[in-house]
Image (tube, rainbow, N blue to C red):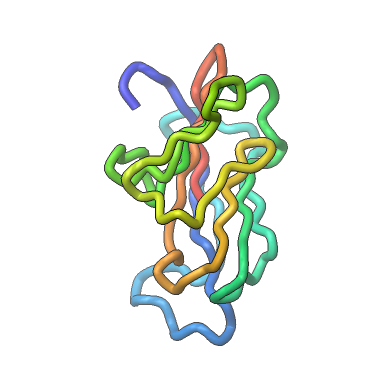
Length: 144
């Protein structure tokens, strides 16, 4: 993101035990990677609920602890903040609060604390997700 400093946490949405194996060289469980470009507090993570989402079910991805006093959050279906992979912008103090991007499928909604909720999971939902939390001081970036 141009002009906005950030911090990054990364990982993947895990696959259900009944799903076919993932493509080679991709991790199968959620993991957290911290970028060496910006410091990230050790307590920063992304929670996935439920921890073993199933095809057809719902999942919620949320930064923990929930960001306080944020201006906006931007979710991406990507390991980075590629604007072409943006799912939505969520600004709780604007109308409408959620503005959908090119990667929005109609099944994603914003939840409390910058959460990403995905309904009706499909195998194609497996992959990397990134959230950028915009605050008055900086714009931390978390990936899951």
